[in-house]
Image 1: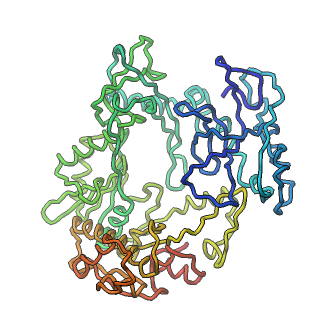
Image 2 (image 1 turned 60 degrees about the horizontal axis):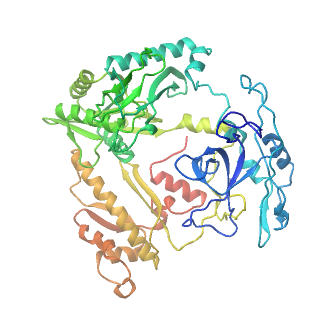
Image 3 (image 1 turned 180 degrees about the horizontal axis):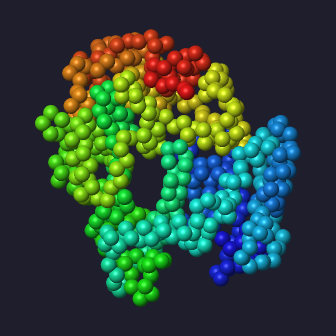
Length: 596
């Protein structure tokens, strides 16, 4: 954007540039919406969409980019003035008649001080075009002040000009207070690119397009939130690539959360060691097969006008994650590993009676084994293939703290620092522990400025939890796709999903060498659903049940065994409904969770 606020300035093509709050009235035809819900959403105007007809907006509700043609621009007031006016209004419902909506009611623009705009040319400002709300039909109920509470100033300001501890441009990084540290970090990144022979310089062939790149500057933090390093990374602008020309398949698997928790549970039960490794500049190891050209990056441009013919998959390329995964897969298979059939990011190495498990999440690797020699051998093999960083026993992985007491066989996962950061951000440090997420009997009321109402459509919430070693390793809480005509049908359909997860977990455990010989016990608190699964009874009441839901019957007494459990002893109860305080904490304890 050139400037902020209403302006006379025009671009070369005659377009007018500004940043303003908008009210998006676009609604997908399939989106369910009640009559009392808002007909639009608040957003920030970013420009004109390139690939579609409409305005490019930042949706403040979903925090996503969206394209809309039905937009109301609210430009008459500066944002801070508008916010102050709205905060003075009483927080009682106001009845706004349809004819009143013909007048401008809420209009806003974002103001920027002269200091923040330093370095930009001053331009004259003309009075904004007055755009009005239109309304018809019955009066609308508006909760005064609720929009102000939802639209935080930083949500809008950060879009363009809010200061950030991380530099946005190379000039800002090198000329800032930490310029020397960013320069050293940048030199390290360029050194890795050159060492890996990432590209060859050549003239751009006729008919070919060269994409551009950008250096990204990030702070890296440790498990306690401390700043550990300054990281620079050259990222290609992959959005400039064309499918079918310079990339094709892009999918690359990552380790499943359930697989990770199963491995941690087994390690805790059997006393296995858990080591962590990090592959430095992992994507630069991937080899791309397509013909991709990139302009020389700023800081390495020799001024010859040549371009980079990429040989390795640098960050930002569409196919980079896939190329890296295949490179790592090739190296592990050549080293004697076998890929799991249950999770393509899990690799197993068997030597005599010892087994080692390797789980990959992009460039973060965990090694599980009872054999120290096998762990050392695997680390050495990876170091021979890639530039690695050995991190020892795992303590912090993918944002989770891992605390372990080997003697007691206890392993805990938590995100204490993350939660403390959220509490500090929203001023809840001294708020105490909530009894439950919501008080029992709480009813959601529809409000014209919020989309928080879910209309009842007859479907139910189904949930399950799978326990291993006294802790939850897999769970689900999801709205069912079909309507059950009774609680029996609802539980019976949910049973189908539970058993599918159990079958997958049994196969995973079998691959890990700790398979279950006896059928896995599945607890259900609906006696009719259990009887229906064990026997083809209740025929007259279950004619509408589709054949696929009866798949459970084939596995009974082979892989699963159904047992009835009382509702107050059901570990999955907290995943399907809101409970009273005592029952909620009891459910958490049954699932192996606790609050510290």
